[in-house]
Length: 166
Length: 229
Image (cartoon, rainbow over all chains, first blue to last red; front, side):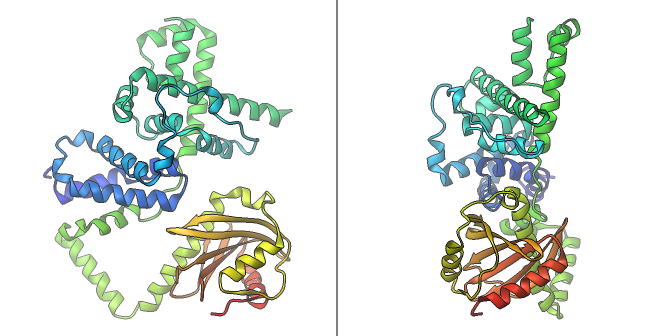
């Protein structure tokens, strides 16, 4: 199968659309917008398909396009991504509910600056170095954000568990 | 590697435990327990992130990009036969299928907002009357106690998500303006059944937890709201 061909595009769409949709969903928390973002991203990807030289980088390339689409649409949200490391107090607390819903809510409430590297790692399977390259930051900064994001999730879940068992 | 380094690494790359980290965990029961706890929360995180992917997503992307034009010949033949089948007389069924998708989407929306069935939010009956009026319809009689009203993103726009107490139990009414549908249809997903009806202002979807309730509450809606179809 020729790289850059329509068949290759179809293969990539079928292989990655589910992960990319979930990534888009967790960026915007709306499934209609997520699908629209995905459509737009693949439309741009198809127009530039001949530029893809390395099959192994297709997923990362598509995620970059998707991130740009999301930034274009939610320009104000992009302002949440600030230089430097955010204060941990920005991570909000939420009331208890069932465990899965709690986790979903918590992930949704994480500021984008924490949520995005977490999604790229948990959904995309990318390493801290790869995420740093995608986000245009350092590997150390990504590790810090991931550590804080997971620590915040774990802390909230532990609090919720205690409340439930009390 | 010390405990601090181990825990930092475990929280930043939980699946990438190198030789040094494994050696530390084998000698430090506290860090081993910490690692297991992180693995558990990581599994919970992955379950939470795995939101359902819309059916036929990849197909819709490919259709939109037109790449199917380059599909293999057998795919062409299959597509052609499907087109012929449609042209041969399944027009009505297609309309119903399209509407049934809207019904399914309404149920998915309810599933995505479970708090709408457990919380009271913006529950002013006057709001309902105004919203219905804005939708081009008239509320003739109260529907029942309104529990939840929220403006939600729906199909490239926004629509009203309303939960009220019907005699049959909680019912969700979703008003989707300016999105005409071809026909009424019913769909079920999990324990929920939804009915969509085209009206002048767009369409509405009614979701309850059983087919019987949806049918009965649907009759109440028709009696108490003049939809001006």
